[in-house]
Length: 598
Ligand code: GCB
Image (tube, rainbow, N blue to C red; front, side, top):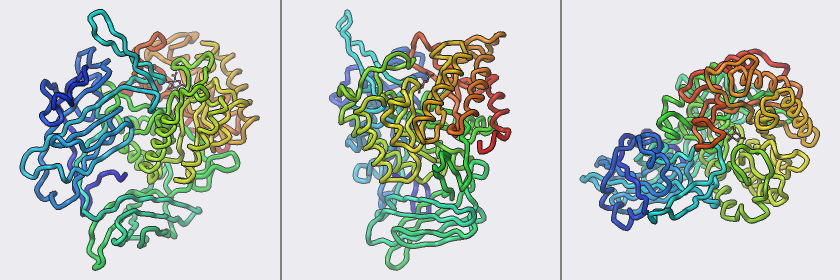
């Protein structure tokens, strides 16, 4: 699904701002006519944002069930000859949308965009009513999986409790921008761009989907606006003899204009994409960018911020990007779900290598902290064929959405699944086959530290192994000597049993900003620094380790729990994006040349 853009032939109008909002604890809104008549007793609610932290109400913060949003808009009369689309960047987790009382689209994926052709339903003269019902309940038929338990309490009231598998607050609402946009009646449906770079020249392979009777023209332009390559047809290769390769240090983007023409050569539709020419490969147990090995330095992140929760906002996004650059990071992982498209656009423009992850987090028997025994989930039917279908659908839609971003260098199938069960092998085999058919980027799967390398049935299927390691924190708490010995031993076992390179996708400790202790203790800033330093020494002993991403970039909100103090405090930055001492430790390491090839 193409990101909405204003072009020579397309218009767009953001519907972001203040919408009306109401809880519907009894789920009666549809019956009572809210889709057509509007919501009866609304309060104000910003869009995009999570609804949880905006008001002072505990009921709203912890609400489970249906909530309703409503807004009004005019549609300009000059749009009436066009195809009019209503598009949501993401709504968590389930949504039903009505325009002037007509149901136009339903979505059951909280982290991917969806849209509807609303041309037949909009009015030219009157205001148009848009109503959205959002539900934030999790189940084992979706990602991330979870369960809502219902219990009747004293006064007959039903109390709902969420059992979630993942370590982040179940924020909900209209989380990303909402757009009305137009396309011409004959339009460019899809675009797929793949690039290659051989040290000097580059190749841009383009494929487009549109009406068969139309003709497609491509024109690739440099920063000066000069056309450097042109092509025609549904599928073509554009050659760039002297290409500027895209990399984190030099995120050079060409502009690809795509024109759809009729037989007389008149332009029917126009769209454009930013294209970074780069080549990414895994060979000789290394990750290669543009013909040289590259070591990933960076963070596992979250979409999480004070007040707005998981709502996208450009302020937090750019602040994060600048902080990561300043720390010397060249990469991040979209833990634990697909991020807003605008985040990937910034990564293309500012230069970050992105591990793009699905929302498959917690396909195992327990939540946090992830220690103890793993009970089966694949072999006992807890992970059903419906969940697998959902996972496959997410993966396909993620690839279709993100494949044209030069910043996206690999796909992460899941975070911390129960991958020692024999039944997991077939499940993941299907996922891998689907990805290989759609795209040639490397595939990663991220492992919990309880996964034993000798018993993991999934790692052999992927190109890069992701490891989340917390020895000295969740195991031997506070004992870094034992922790680093366990880490060394664990990495050694992975290196001996698998041929693929390893990225340390998580390592870190909860740290209360301003808590100082000598000698260090858990939760102090000194302990975070020492933990990172000791871990780095061990990583440097292993040629197989081709990247390190600290958990987490910033402190983030979780559910209330005995192991969390107002959220997870493993951030190198606070939740309001100021540094802890560890930022300096990372900056020193990441901004200086590491050992050869790193
Ligand atoms: C993990 C999870 C991550 C948690 C983290 C922690 O392994 O992947 O979602 O937040 O540990 O801090 O416990």
